[in-house]
Amino acid sequence: MKRRFHKYFPWLFVIGDLLVIAIGLTVTVAVFVYFIDFPKVNLTLYSYFLLFWLLISVGRKDYKIGRTTEVGYTLKQLPESMIWLLGLMSIFWVPTQEHPLGIFFLIGVAINSLLFLGLYRVGVHLALKQYRIQGKNYRNAVILGKSGTSNKLSQVFRKRRDFGINFIGFYDDLDVNSINTRGAVDKFFEEANELDLDLIYISENLDVSIIKKVMNYADDKYIKVKVIPNGNLQLEKNLSFSKYEEFFVININDIPLDNIMNRALKRAFDIMFSLFVIVFILSWMVPLVGFLIKLESKGAIFFVQERNGVNNQVFKCLKFRSMTPNDYADTKQAVRNDPRVTKIGAFLRNTSLDEMPQFLNVFIGNMSIVGPRPHTIPMNRTFQMQVEKYNSRHKIKPGITGLAQVKGYRGEIENLRQIRSRVRLDSFYIQNWSIWMDLNICIKTVIELVYNRESAY
Image (cartoon, rainbow, N blue to C red):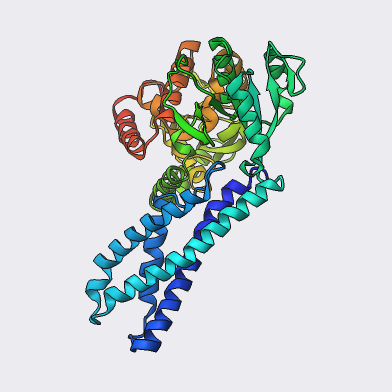
């Protein structure tokens, strides 16, 4: 349960929240009906309460119990969320009620819900801490560079086992023989692949070149980096902070899509967009294009190719087959006037219609509408060795279109400058993602397809 836990916990927490709200509502209804003959409540009221609470709880991230979050913060969130609920119910439910005690009933629900939810959330918080104390839902961590503050931070890790951070040890050039030191900083890069790391903490006394090397390594391996700061650190990225008792550390490589709400929003957009295309376009396009492909050459309608996706996981990418079957499809890019391309294939590639089946990949969940374009596995291996920080583009799902594509980087990659430019644009997109950026890229993609098809062949 080391990594899977964080995927399921938010949803389990929210479901528990909704059950507790339903209990608080039921108790209030029973009290009002018994003592003051309040009208019996129908399922519509339950729907209002549960829907609004779901939106509030998820929108305010009440489910997010950080490893270093104390119980007081959990309780602090609750009254603010309840005020939002009272406000929405007062606007959408109370005006529809003829009974004069409607507002008092609402206050009664709020009081009961605060009581039950307070007990529930504190219980969950304490249970989660106890779960981590038992050595579950942990994260492996190392500290690079020893100093006064990094030593104190390691002591916090040992004392606060409820943080669920398994401190493996230090790497330091000046204190190599200490009992908690695994070796010099160079040894970290030799051992890192075997440590199954989740977190790297960097002391303020490390050289800037070492910090950059660690950041590049962490980006390639999808490991979070946190810096124990001082005033001399000069970093280019937007930073966020985590608190460990009285200590603050800087989160260096957080991205917007680390946020579960942002991921949910992007996924909802992907599902709605791809479902629309599948139902209203692919439903007739696949039989028509398939017939034309079969008419010209023997072979399958779809070309299925393994490509690297999020976290470098391999998935099967779908396209309409645009070439005659050949042994070089995975290793040799299509070039202008490529003899392997069929007549119908040339049309499909020129209009980018050969990519349309990838909406099925989006609906399944191994691609997104917008993201870095996925490359073949052989190309990926080559570019990893040639382009710095190339692997960082795999932090998120690959896309049918992307920022690099609407900036003119489509089609054949003829030189390293082109792929480096693509990687820089992909990195900018990953670091600055927003749903508005996705919508803007979709609009520009349509414009690009209409007015600039020179590089599509």
